[in-house]
Image (cartoon, rainbow, N blue to C red; front, side, top):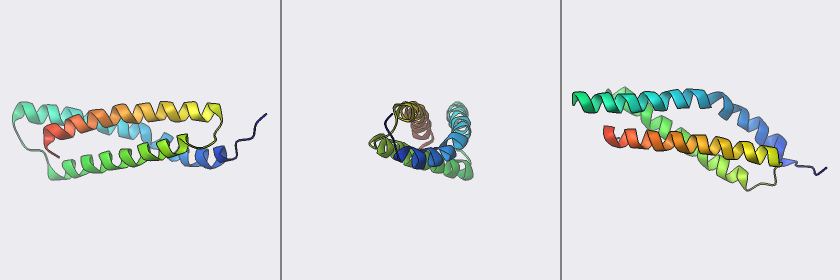
Length: 106
């Protein structure tokens, strides 16, 4: 059986992503809803909410880059599959967040 020494380091860092992912997805959905509501009501959003949205986008983008970097390592097939799944989830979240941000003029 092949040894994948990089797995241990990546797995320990992935725990942070696994814990944050549900929160990011909920925040993204809230951002989309906020953008739709603001557009319907033709009102401006709260600056604190806009700042939180910007931070969400930056944080998710940073994790997307980490996942890309890790996919280039010699990792076990199981871990590479998990990275692809997490990356796809973050990509979808980022697409939604960027579309909502564009509506909010972030």
